Length: 460
Image (cartoon, rainbow, N blue to C red; front, side, top):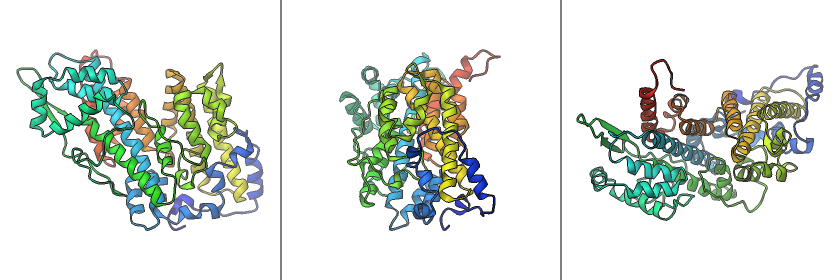
C-alpha cells in the first residue's frame, strides 16, 4: 500500500469473516443492488480496481482532504495529470464559494446594515458583491453610485485597471462563468500552470476611511480576484484533464454543484467518466454528475428523471413526499445507503477491511448533500438548512471536505450567522491563503452585528 498508508490498511481475515459478511447483508437497501454496484466505493473494494489510487501519494492526500498537498504530490509525477485535474477542480469550487462568502458578508454589512459613517467606497464593494451573488441589476445600480473620490482611492491603490475590468464585466450582464481572462495581467495570476496555487496579492487590497472625525481605517479585499482565481483553477483542471486523457468538460460538472447563480457548464461528451473524477469524493457514480448538475436548478423533477440511473437520485427519491424533500426521511436514507455500501464492500472483498468505514461515511454524507441540493432548488430553505447542518456535523475524517465547509460558511454569511462562518474560515485560511481576502467583510459583519446586539443577546 504505497500511497494510502493506514487509510487502506487491510484487516486480517478469520473464521468469522463469513458470519460478518452475512450480518452485513441484512441491512436495509437504500437503492437497488444494480445501482449500488456502480458506486465507486463498492467497485474499489476490489483491490485490483483500487490499486492505481494506492500507488500515488497524491490520492492519499486528496482522500484526507489536504488539497494543497495533493497538488504538490501530483505535480511531481509524470502520470499525475488525472489527479491534478481533479484537485484543481476542487480548488475551483472552493474559491467560488469563498468569493460568495465575501459577497454575502459585504451585502449584509454594507447593504442591509449600512451606516452613515461607512466609507464612500463601499458602493464599489457592493457592486462587486452583488454581481458575484447573481444580482446584476443591483450591481449596476451600485456601480452608478461610485463617486469620483472612490475612483481616486482605487487609483491610489493601483486598482484602476481592475476597476475597469470589473465595471466592464458588470455592464455586460455579470456573465457566468466568469467572462474575464484569469491570465490577464490585471489579475496578476500569470499563465495557467498545472500544480500551481496563485495568491491574490498583498492584503488588504484596499484601505478606506470611515466618514467620521477619527476617519478610522477600513480594510477590504478584492472579491473579484478570488472569483477569477477560481476560474484560473477551472482552466487548470481542464488543461490537466486533456493532458491526462480525461474529458475536460467533467471539470465543469465537478464544479457545478458549487457554481454561482447563473453559471452553466457543458455536459461531457460521454456520460461515463474516469474514476479519477470519482475516487474519494461525493459523486458516487458517473450518472450522479448529470443528476446533481440538473438538481441544483430543477430540484425534485431531476430526482424523478434520474432515480433509475443515479445512485444518489435513487437514495433521495424515497425522502420525497408531496413534492418536497423530508429531512428526517433523507437522513434515514443516507444512513441506509452508508450501511448498504459497507455491506456491499464486504461482499466484494470477502471480508471487512479497515477502510470500509471511511468509504461508507463518504456515501452517507454524499446522500445528505444530494438531498440538500434538491431541497435548495425546491425553495425549501429550512429543510435544506437542516440537511446542510447535519452533513457538516457528520463530516469527519475523509468526509471533512473544505469545499463543502466553505459553502456552509457562505450560506451562514448570507443568513447573518458570522460565528460559525468565522470558525470554518479560521480552520481553512492557512491552507487556502487567498481566502483571507474574503475575511475582511466577514469580520466587519461580526463586529457590526455584535455592536447592534442587545447586551444579553449573543449573536448566532
